Length: 220
Image (cartoon, rainbow, N blue to C red; front, side, top):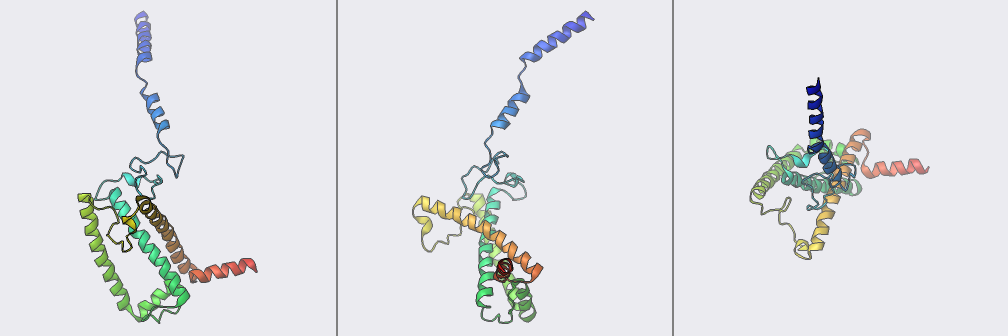
């Protein structure tokens, strides 16, 4: 019994001088840099603010994926591509609703563009087929550019050299501001495009038409 008591005391004394791994890891976690967009979460390791529009928003941890050809470079390329397409889509939705269909698409008479799509499908399906072929060609070119750019490191994500007015060749601060604006507007446009599509499928009204009706209902 005496030997057991002595061994217990020695073990307790040794534990007192052992490194407190649990406490140190906890303190490191508490002192980690917080996300600018989600202050209650730690900043994702790869989102260090070097990319335009990076505010540390990644609650699902997608920026840490590095498998099957998906990494931060690929994700930024996809975000810029979808943002640019969404900006064009929102502009197209509103332009056609406000000013009428494009030449050759006179069959699309409805204000709701999701319904007008099916009018074009029924009257001129070749237009839809041509659009799909064009999309496949663009995807092929952008896929090659993304793959080669990621491997060489000589191409920034989303950079296709399209800068006819030379904005990106001037002041670095102006270029950085324009890049941040493109990302912000692209993200907003993705929400707007999704809203226009869902709203059109649900109440079959155009975007401006639904907004006008909502304002009239609330005012009168």
